[in-house]
Length: 117
Image (cartoon, rainbow, N blue to C red; front, side, top):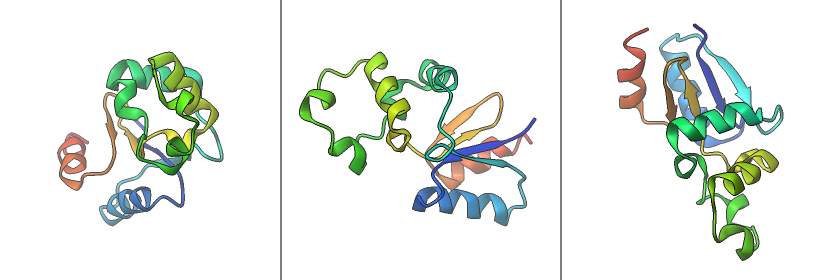
């Protein structure tokens, strides 16, 4: 099973996650969803599994610059549309282990999840 790290190349948190994985010689594929986009089906699957509230980066500049009308009354459908239109609104990184996904970077969670590999 291939491990895939989803994120944006110049994001500091993604850089930390990549350095952590590289330092432990863990092989993974990197998917930059700012340049390569994200498939709607994949994002919708993540939302079903993790919840759109977990995936939507409300603290980021991209979200904060949205008009109030776009920020208010969010539903899963609206949040997915926003994230597809502007992938930088997806929290990062997303570590896809095949049977499990982790959002954000916490070394202790990565350690625990990757022990099985």
